[in-house]
Amino acid sequence: MATEDQVIEVLSKINDPEIQLDVYTLGLIYEVKAIDENNFYIKMTFTTPTCPYGPMLVEEIKTKIEEELKAKVDIEITFNPPWQPSDELRSILGV
Image (tube, rainbow, N blue to C red):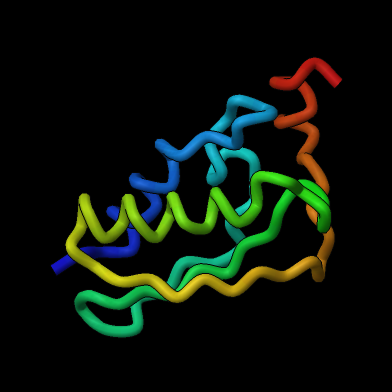
């Protein structure tokens, strides 16, 4: 049985190819919720609505969670609110 913490651990290993930071640290993940013991819901965003890597990231998340946790995930993409890097993240990125 997988847990929300294990899903977050997997997300912490998936890097945005342009920024080279993981999607969880970037703040692209708005919500992780267990539906039942092997099904999860993730609400996420992209750095921009036209992110060319968005579909690839979604597929990578689904594949990694299935491979590593033997679980399924339903991913909702939202742009409300639009992604804004935190002050801490801006510092990490040198912005």
